[in-house]
Image (cartoon, rainbow, N blue to C red; front, side, top):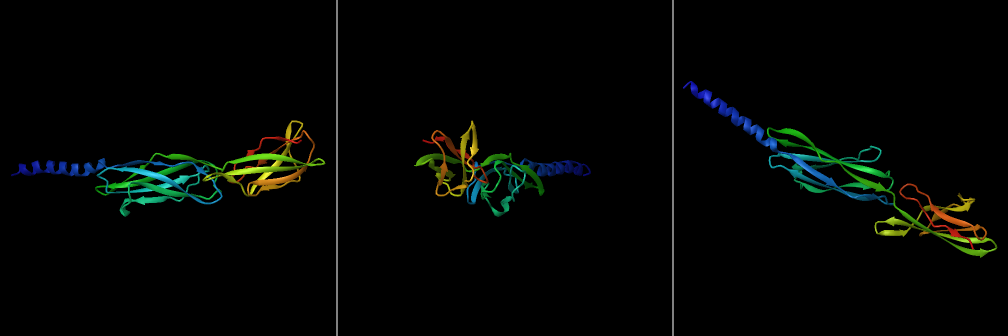
Length: 231
């Protein structure tokens, strides 16, 4: 009778050890993915996809997705929690309204999962990066002689949109003249493209070369037309 407890005790300890160790195989892994962003004149919701692999022994899990900009500033996190019965794959959204800095952004997804006996373990998905850039522009320049040394110059500016390139509005344009091998700004002109056009009248002489330059600023990338020669 005295030997019975000595036999039961190791078996009971082994069973308890197995009960605790078994859920340790629980785990949460996964990835995030997204596309590059073009800054536009209006706010846009940019999707970031997540895909989790959750082991069967996991009691619950919580994921938080944040985005860090090139300056190191981090967005408010979006939380996905298994207690509200979400799927293990889906998308979260980050808003871009056109004034954000261009450069490389980083998606950081971290969280924790629980296993028996109610232990919280942290996890982190591999970071994902994407590029944010200003909208591209395309600029052309044409010239028409008005006689007596006066010329009409017409700059046409197209700007990148969700559906390709369209006529630009509110984009600043400057005219430059080639002087002794150096491009110099034509003074006294402040041009802004309206419905894709900016028009100016200038004095000149045949043979002079001019070009139109879109100034890079805010969410607009710069561009330069091919030179035109006055005739």
